[in-house]
Length: 89
Image (tube, rainbow, N blue to C red; front, side, top):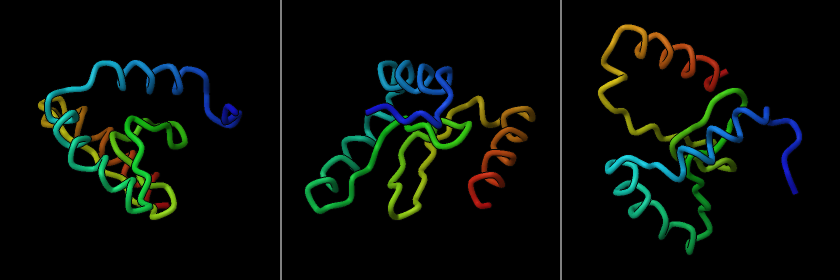
C-alpha cells in the first residue's frame, strides 16, 4: 500500500536512487542488509518527509548518509545542514 503522505516526486527520486547506487552505497547496503534477519529492517534510499535518506531504520530513528564529493561543496554542505536540522526536529 502506498504511503500517501509522500510527495510523488520524492518517491520517484528514491526509486531512481535505489536503481543507481554508488559503489559506497552498495558496500554499505551489503553491511546493513543482514541486520534485517535480526529484526532491524533497514531501508535504502527511503523517503523521509521531503528528503531521501540513504539508509534508515525507522523504528530506531536512525538515519545513515553515505556522503560523496558533492557534499564537500558549499551548497552541498548547506543542504546537508538543513536536512540534518529537519531530521533532528
